[in-house]
Image (tube, rainbow over all chains, first blue to last red; front, side, top):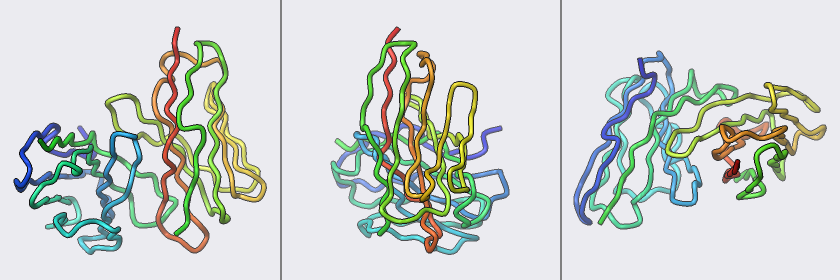
Length: 114
Length: 111
């Protein structure tokens, strides 16, 4: 069973559209994350939730809105997509927000905005 | 905020050669983790270092944490094509609670 699963894996959409990426973890972890990885492989944290509460909100356009209906799910909604949003988006989870915890990544969602 | 710098950004070696990637921080780190991402894949945890001067080995991989806990390295002996991928370090300062990822070192191994 996949520990952190996210859908869709691939997404091609036009500028201006709104899209969502869903994420679920079955590890029983309290903390979940969204990371963005650009074409240069830079891995940047976007958001972090602990038990459904937002704890990290990096400098991200407010077109990006995370939602955590429960601690096993963290979805990412993006409004008015722009070309620069093209990237791989990784959902991840860890036991809790402690910095010694291993981060488990999902397989990624490859977003292409045309 | 605290940043973790990683060099080199890219490394191309012949199979059988050794490889090292370095991770440096301007502030003292409480811990450092290393991840590997295969092409087209996702980052996977390799190891965590916590103690000053700590050295850990995983088969051909040797991980070190500096005495001052401001730098770390990953050394691969006799690379194989299966070592291809991007290696990330991720560290956290004593006062911080989140891990900061370096920009990664992409390793290409040609047979």
